[in-house]
Length: 265
Image (cartoon, rainbow, N blue to C red; front, side, top):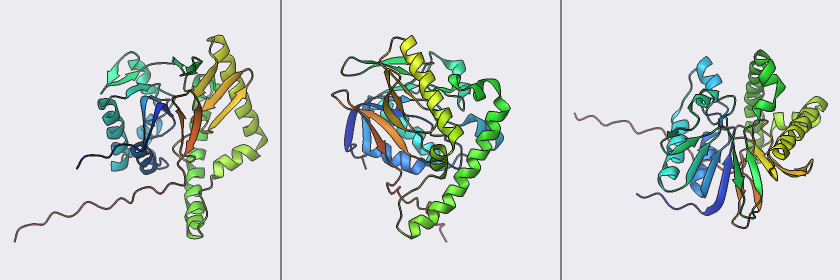
């Protein structure tokens, strides 16, 4: 059976912070999203694979492998695939300038939109002082985030029973806790300054798991979000307009166990 064509095709697709290799990764939802959406160019904007988690405790179910295969298949079918590693997949930073299965690995780049505007594409972790100067604290924060994700699963299990949409505990905390709000604001300001330094009209990044499209500090700031909680991606339409697509409340396909082999009597 041949795979059906995606329902929507865009000029460009931006995905970040998938964290394949963690239990929090919503690989089934991403796979479903990729089946319905395609683009001429696909940017993987860092933390696609979580090397930190895999090093501590190997976890790689079939759904995570299916996501990798789906991305490779899109490359084989003609999409240009560009991978910009983040801090969790920093092991790929030793391979800048190489190709893996048709996927280009680069440090950062400038994307020219359909309207001629230039956008700096970068994961963003190099502007996170915690990641750069206190790695032990970054790892500790990563463990705390994993705990919040586990709690979030229980909360949303009950919400689904009562027909309520998905709700993110950590996203709520980011908006309510003053320090988190200040951190997000400082991150956006720093990325905007880097875009101006590169003579770009905007910046497209990931890292903080908070999807956004806004005009900040004199440039256009876009963040892809993540596929642990928000399940968001950014797309560029043929006219140069950008849009956040939220797939959090899409129903992921039900995975049935593989049938048992029937042995001859």
